Figure (cartoon, rainbow, N blue to C red):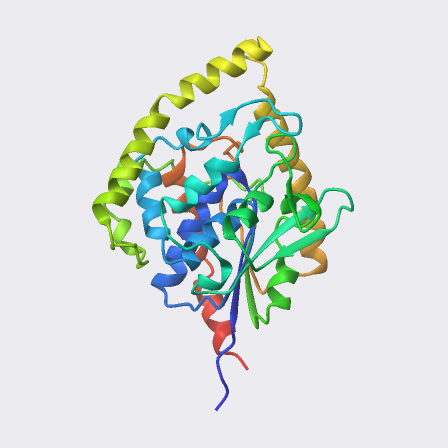
Length: 321
């Protein structure tokens, strides 16, 4: 009797489109498709880490109850020497508010994060040690967040070299690789979904939430939400004063992120042609800019639909010899 094939889920980079990964995981879990390994890059690593720590349900509920644009305003505009935003403390807050997991060893599913060596231009695999440190590295968008130094190497976003790290998942031992590419220009066939229409459906994702101190956790989330309610206005005011731009001209953050997105799209095409996944899911989010953080429900829904469209193929791969 042959054992089933192991499944590696590759969650690619894509800024605000990354919320689609929640819908991807939701659909796979609902269909009882096993996830044995996770390889993530940038926002994909963040979503993957929360799923592997059994806390993705908390993230989904949090996002749907907030104006998604406030997620980006969590980061302080400080204009340090090597980056526009200060992400060190905020990344920890955005992760730790959903889970108490601190290290890779505590995860229920093996997870690998991908970063880029800033000096050598090499991909760097992070799969042990402190999770927050790994997230800071893989999510360090060049020009926006300062590089992170780990073991003597300055690291930035892994999407610079491999936005959809299929090869990493195969190296982990995955027999079947399901990859998610968020950088395609395929446009949605549905209208954006309002968050309130999806909140009631949160129970679809059977993930564990830390209930050891529910009142404390809820109070913390409320305080953070209230605090960052005003952060977006401060953020816009500060950047407007610094650059004194008119409203028609794209701002510096949108320009940087869109430019990197264009580059990642080209790199992804080349990499996927060389190292093809068994299943490639490309959520229809081409109409979203990289800073459309207010389209949380829409992105989640498109991720969910992306799996549904290929569910039969996925099942056939798992049972084929």
